[in-house]
Image (cartoon, rainbow, N blue to C red):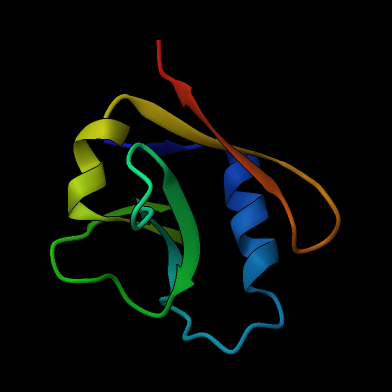
Length: 94
């Protein structure tokens, strides 16, 4: 299952600040349409049917069903950028 670093948790919290999303909203990771092998992230109010829900502290990440296997041995990390624009990175867990 995908894991989240403390930096990713902080970055996702930062993204939610000022957004009009419910308290149980989260970051969704899904394959990008028409671009095989590419993933995209977006804010989502709720998980889509079939999404895997990963929670750490008060942060939720929804992993699309067709991305679960690809992300199973990964950890989501983030580097701060300008406020509201972190850079997310996937790392293979040891």
